[in-house]
Length: 212
Image (cartoon, rainbow, N blue to C red; front, side, top):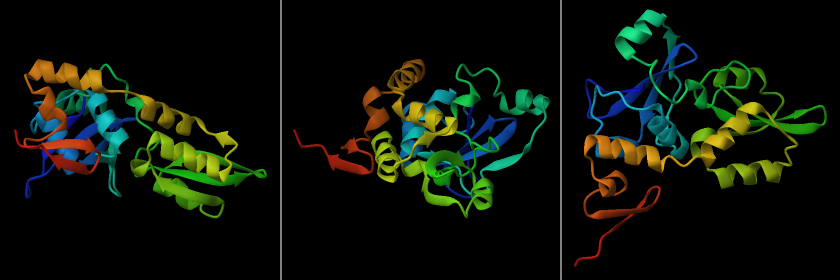
C-alpha cells in the first residue's frame, strides 16, 4: 500500500509505493496533499492505492526525474513498506510501453511504417526513439478529452496497450473510494474537496463562499 511521508526540511509530503518491484516516489501538489489530509491521512499513514491512482489521474501526484529508486528485496517490501495487501493491483498504474517503468511518463506519437502510433514512454525510452517521435505530451497534463483531441488531431491510427490502460484510468471514477476512506477515518465529505471558506469548482480554480 502507498505510504505518505513528510520531507525532513520542509512542510510538504510525498508518497512511496512499489511498482514492478521498484520503489517509486510520487511528489504531490498542494491540492493532492490537501485531499489526503482531508480524508484523514497523515504522514506515516498507509492508504489504498486507489487514492493515489486518482491523484495521479488528476495530476496531483506525479513522478519527476528521480522518481524510481533501486529494486528492493521482497522482504523489505513486506517489513517496512507493506505494499502487498492493497486490493488495487500495482499494474493499475500507467507504465512505459517499452520497459514498464513508471518515471516521468509522456504520451509519445511516432511514425511507424507510414502511420502514427501512440504509446507511453519513460525518459530513457523517449531518448532512444527521439528521431521518430512527432509529438510528446506529459501524462500529468492530460485529461481524457484532451488526450482524445491530441490523438484525433494527429491522426493516430494505433494506440498501444499502455495508452489504452491510461485512457481507462482517466475514465475511472474514484469518488466511492474516497468516500469509503472518509467514513473509516471520520473525515468530512465537504472537506475532501473544498477547504474552509472556499468552493473548489474546477481544478486550480476556487471561489469564496457567499456570506450568509
